[in-house]
Picture 1 (cartoon, one colour):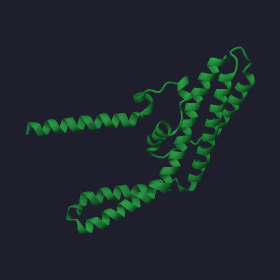
Picture 2 (cartoon, rainbow, N blue to C red; picture 1 turned 135 degrees about the vertical axis):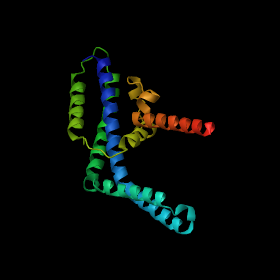
Picture 3 (cartoon, one colour; picture 1 turned 60 degrees about the vertical axis):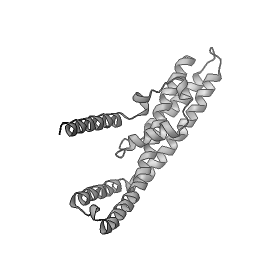
Picture 4 (tube, rainbow, N blue to C red; picture 1 turned 90 degrees about the vertical axis):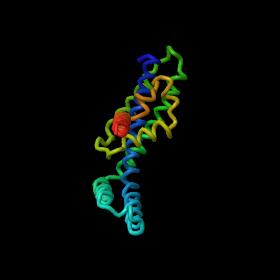
Length: 195
């Protein structure tokens, strides 16, 4: 494989592996932290409902029970949560190793033999594909997007893999929900204006 193609391949795989690492760590974070936050919010709402009459109604209580039920969903991941952390950490290590490999390939002469670096790349790629966990928790995609695009250092990827705002940096489901909300708000506004 020539130098330019190997760099492009490493950057593409770097993106996939880096994002996968963040997704595993996002699942771990959500499973670890969400039940506590839901409990605190539910308790605070319950206490406030005792003293604020507007909060003491059946619809809000039903919504709170639905949200509190989510704790049972999060608890189904509790037994395996440390595996998500371990895999996410290992994928992060592979991601940073790929960055070093990328720069090593980049520093070599265009006519140099890259077989040794390509072999190392293939080993890292194979390992990353063998350790990933396919089952991830709800909303881990959104959190992983935040972790990858707003927290992680990824400038080396952008030399060969250009990220666009709407296509890459914002989850498709968030875009669709945003469009739906805008349509709902405009529709509601039109109905109010007609009255």
